Length: 324
Image (cartoon, rainbow, N blue to C red; front, side, top):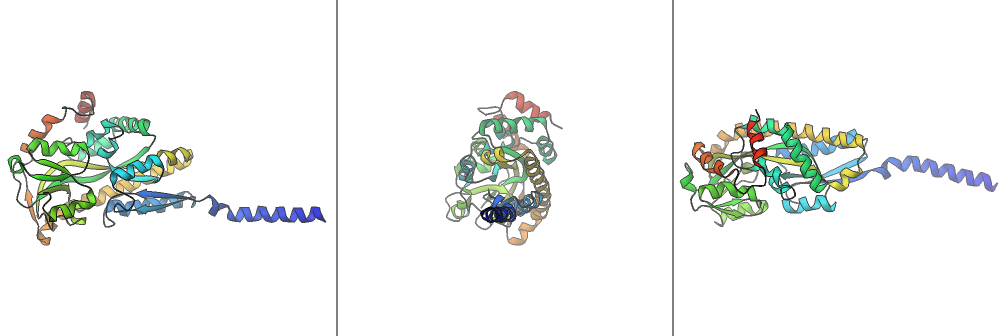
């Protein structure tokens, strides 16, 4: 009698374990970034989260936290190491705080054009630099996204480098962003992304610089209505998974995460390229002035600094310039 009772309890326990298994095994993940919900990066982060859930049979559930809701860019980068966030979008400049050479892609006028940038993202050099970052941090770079060409917005037109002399321009709080203002005689003023609009409106700064989709999403064209198409940085975002999560993933799950985020990056790139083409004309309908700029004088001044006190080697720089 006691034996039958014991066997009955054991069978029920096994059955309950089987039923509860998938729910109990689900791992909750956090994906953090500083961009608005209206931007393509967020749209495709949500898609990636859904795809990871589907392709892992629901074992991973990823929530996406946009618009600095889990902290500024410095905070979420630190969160990767601490394990308080599992994945992020971040600029190469911020990743470079842990491994300097990867900042090469963030330097002004480093790329000839978009095709040069895209070829770099598929190059052995990028793989090597990503490997250097992984060795330094344990975090894993899974994709590089096109953030867009960065342009200066101001209250007065900028047509030549001399127009920026003495201008107080907001830049992100990372070293490479200072190279362009310094070369043209402007005063670089680091301000957190979430505080830029107010800084422009209050006159704390005279100008700022960002890609067209971001200028639209954050409405920087309102307090800073002249959009000068300097195209000084072909900007990138990195999709990075933190070391604590990456170490736990099986080889199959690593392949799944890598494939999903690579697909999301391609889809986001397509959206940003289309958006840039539309916005060049679209801003005039919003009351902004789009000012086309001869970039050659700016490029000539800035490229002189490409090998001055930088974290990459001459060999790495020459390899990047030779990429076709």
